Amino acid sequence: MKALKISQHGAVSEAKASDAPEPKPGPGEVKVRVEVAGVNPSDVLGILGRFPNAQLPRITGRDFAGTIVEGPSELVGTSVWGSGGELGITRDGTHAEYLVIPRDAAARRPKNLSAEQAAAAGVPFLAAWHCMEQARVSEGEWVIVSGAAGAVGHAAIQLVHARRAKVIALVKDEAEAQRVSREGVAAVARSDRDELAEVVKQVTGGKGCQVALNGVGGSVFQQLFDALAPRGRMVMYAATGGREATLDLQSFFRRWISFYGVNTSTLDATRCAEGLQQLAPLFEQGVLRPHEITARYSLTEAVRALEHVEKSLPGRAVLLPGA
Image 1: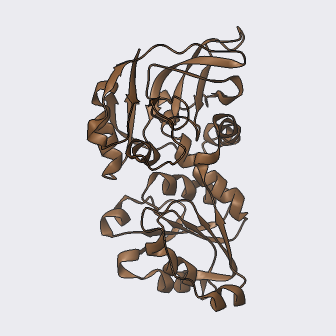
Image 2: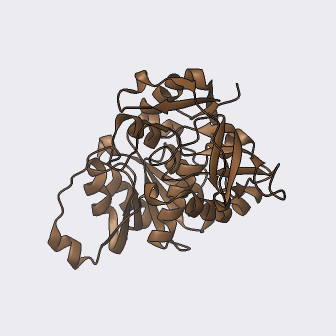
């Protein structure tokens, strides 16, 4: 089979598809023919060597949609989707024609999602869903979604709206502001203008927000912190915009602020399947909308797909292993 397999860490431009043995399922496992594989920032980071627990050689990729072709007879032919923090890091991942995973890691695909839409949903929607759970977002609360123009932001806005909470979107600049859907968004603020505090004050009547989702990192930490209401909660799930931030401890404890972290790379494929099973009914009911797929590549064009993600180009890119 063809697969994007790396034997050493290095630049994305050096990643190439090659021949690899077809995997064979063991006890309690299934073999999936990968129809579409998602491409995420964590896939790029994995190739660059940013995961200290990574094992080599390995096939990259965390997200997939496909069909079970080997395993228990009652499962063969089932359309599935999945993700996993260990996939592409400590065990072979999804950027291949075939994938072997534990039986319980293959979740039934929502009937109204195409393979492309399902493959692009994994990491972004799981990250957003765990942020909702960690922050205990409830009806009527104000939630700031940073990185709102990105894939996780797209998912988070919908999940906040699904909980009957209210969204203020934080984006980097005017270009990102133009890309954010206004559906379910009360206001949009730009971090390059440092206008979040004023926007939050106007929209919430000076009360502040109960929750802030930080998918950027240190560069927006202070803006988000200042915009939180007393007893506010900040959930951090990425730090591409800086790993360090200064915290006024007195303001922190006097306002009863709470901080939480979400790291989806620690969730194995079975845990991710449990999350996807929670999300599936919301897709089937039309509560959640899939991402727009703007670029499709074969495995031999994998570098272009990875560069699409590395450059933060609009829309989602996917790999078509069988193409």
